[in-house]
Image (cartoon, rainbow, N blue to C red; front, side):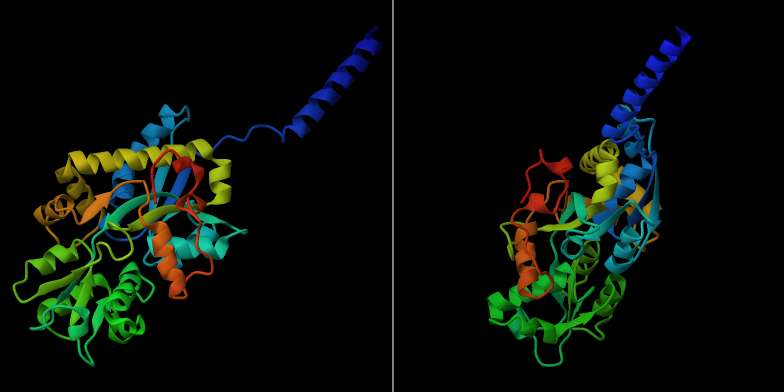
Length: 337
């Protein structure tokens, strides 16, 4: 009798092991700690707010997880951020929209970096201090227009504008010089070194207040009806596949942060100033959050048209057929473009 019971138990154990193997093994718990690579600038404010206010953790607990500890790690530039994502030094990372498209294009079929959500749309503004300059055509030989990098959204959009206004994107390249935003702002205000600067908030607001400078163009309508997404939050396919509820909690936390920016810009400005040591006062940041130059939201805008412009300029090998191709399905219920 004991022998028969032992034999039955052995068979049951074998069946259980077979079923466990067929199902892929024991269910792996999702991570309870993530590192997010964060670049500098107001375009990334939703990430700062969601981490500072515990919104990621709150949403993770609401989803039935034990909680979520989020650490922000600062990086400067898309190259450093891409390296961090590829080396698993961070689980998620913020990128400008152009950088996100380049990362998606270069990792297709391999590590597969995609965007979890959009963060911000931006109005870029071209300023000059030169009298008589009212359009791109008025800049003369030797004039330089500052952009943060030659593959930045400003540079891409300036080439689009050059095609429209001058018939040749190369004419934009003869104008462009790469300068960090604070340096370009300082040079414009001092009237030294550059003839123009394609600015981003909050530097736009600083320059607009300078009576020596005037705006000659904005980015609105250059590639779409409105203003394209300027920044996204990104991850590798493997992380999102292994942590679907964590990914959803992060997305929901970003949505909560966007709601806070809209309802309480004073609090949002304070969080930004605590996160970044910038020479801008609270009132300036609040004004920037209220003047329409930044539109926060998780739904992407103009990404496919931006990709088309980038491909025409040699930055992409493939243009996505629609925005869903470059974003994870976690965003499927949001309207994007």
